[in-house]
Image (cartoon, rainbow, N blue to C red):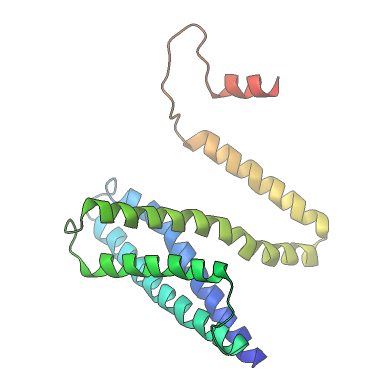
Length: 196
């Protein structure tokens, strides 16, 4: 039974990775559609539709493998912790949101319901983004440690952190209102003030 559980766990984690990838990639792709040339828009929309279908399949696989793992390991659902049932309530809410988004026409949903669907999507993005590092970290850390030594993990993390900071500094626009007052400051002045 352990091999069955491990196979189910691999499928479960794979489906989770597909869902996380879709949750992170979909907003990036859809944000490019309005700015894309007219001939490229169908390509972006096709990719978005395929990612959406993949996410639905992955969610179904998560449900099936999750329940199967519990049944294989424990034989029943009795004795599960309240946290498990809280998680199942969130899963049910996401399932209802997926069904509603699949069966209703655009614009037909009550704005309040659409607001809840949007909130659940945002929760998915945040949770997915937080969960991808613990999933990938041990794998890449093990590869670096095996190929080099344990110090390589920290050099790699430092380089990725520096690259992310430089990318954010160069590409993210300033979101606060600019002031023309004599004491107004910008990003570099704020950083200097924090360091000083």
